[in-house]
Amino acid sequence: METDKHDKHDEPANRPGRRPRLGREQTVAALVSSARALFAERGPDSVSLRDVAQHAGVNHGLIHHYIGGREDLIRAVLDVSERETLEAVRTASDPLDALARLRSEEQRSMDYVRLVSWLALSNRAPSSFQERSSALDAAVSLGAQDSAEVREAFAIAIAQLLGWELFGAFALRAAGIDGDPADHRGAVHRIIDDYMRSATELPDDPS
Image (cartoon, rainbow, N blue to C red; front, top):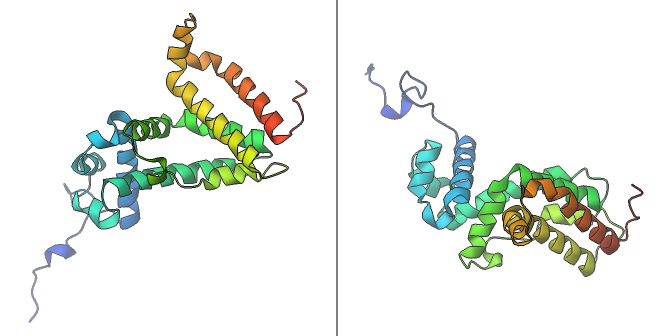
């Protein structure tokens, strides 16, 4: 027997006054984007999964359904950052160009820098959230050799770049210098680039 009644699951998702229903991919992207912003602002341990769901405008249960728990969500945020960084360095011409693109990504998205800082301050083991970086692998592969010394040089350079973004203002103040750390990035980058040229056996910059 036919009926005019519809199952509640078949109701149009885009009827007036109702938020359009998102697909799985869109939902995960919205959750990761919201988590990235909230984790960076408050620290991951001060943000509930309900906070993330509310910020993203999706049902709280979908976090567990599509992603998992808090640590899974943190890893999902870091995975997105890793993919963005890999895309940025994929077409670099040499290790220094790759490093320049890495620091541009960091400056473009301080959320990553802040989130990693929160994770470090929470005494999480790096192995719990940081895998071997495919972006760093790509950067190293652009050099004349892939060795422990070259990888160490990249690790040191990245730590210096992250440190300047976080602590540059304090370091300048301690040195008796007033000003914005951004105004001194050029000097920081030149020092790091000189170090990287030596470590990766690149020729000196003629300029």
